[in-house]
Amino acid sequence: MPISVFWFLPGDIYFLWRKPLDIIKNIIADYEKLIKTSIQIPLSNGDTIRFTFNPQDLPHLLGLQHLVDNPILFEYSEKRLSATELYHRMCSDGDDAIDTNEFENSAYFNELFNGRIQYFSSELILDIIHARQIVRFDYSKIKNFSTKLDNYPNTFFFRLDDDYIENQESVLPCSIMRKNKNSDLFFEIYWRQVWKALEKNKHYKRLKDRYTLKDGTIDEQAIKDCTIDEQAIKDCTNDDILKHYDLLQLDALDKIYLPYMKKDFRWTNDEKRFILQKINDSDRDLLPNEIRQLLNEYKQKQ
Image (cartoon, rainbow, N blue to C red; front, side, top):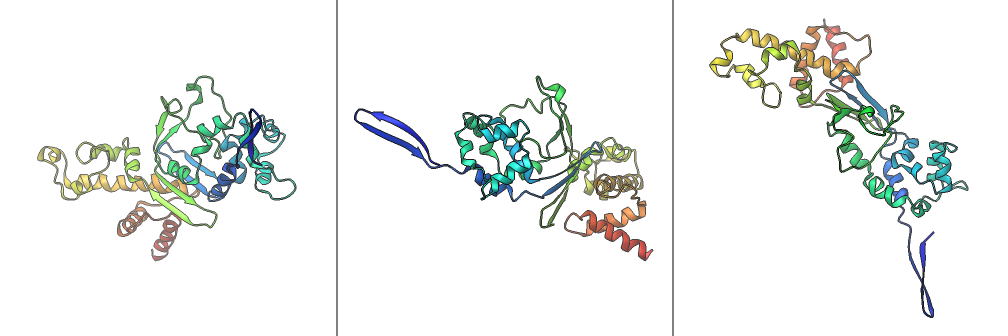
């Protein structure tokens, strides 16, 4: 339906109009790339973020419940129309189809578009997920804010201020695994964040200041050839440093891979050293299922 305006001039009547922009329809088509994509992000504090993008998540992500002057979306805002049914009808070509272009006629649409909808894209969402910047959100630190949080993609919005991250607890992602609807896997270890998360580890403390770089990562070359200045190595022996570095790497493997294993999973230090060697020999981060397979092969040989 075209959007039109009457314009009266003496003796003439003009229509000013434009075609609908298909804004929501285009977003639905783009969102299809995310549907059934599962995300798993183990954190430095021991928690793990797990969620999957589902079709019914989109209406709330876009904030359609705020367009209350649209009769259908008012029913959705009052929970008399489910998100699942709303999404289905937004995608439908049948008799129950909803014309999403009607949403643009809402008096609240421009505000919602400027603050949220115009920024929404599958590419941007994945960029945010991979940005490695996460806070453990405490809503009590935000004035006039309350929420019931569930473990699914809940809200998307654009802000120029840092009200929602200021004074919040920063947490470090140690890795990420992403699986799409075609079962294609993406896995990456965030080594810098892993070393940062281990700063309180007793083995890390033995290496700190002597064998760590400014960003907190381990200076592996310095450990291998002990080329730190003489004062730095005066109080330790090479064997001592190598022992603590070895044990620190084994602790790092726990931090990285245990969140992806079953609760009853256990492995020995020798098994970890075997896996560590395989990782060092590889030119990429090994997937958790590859780790399990390698461990089975190792146990069979033993």
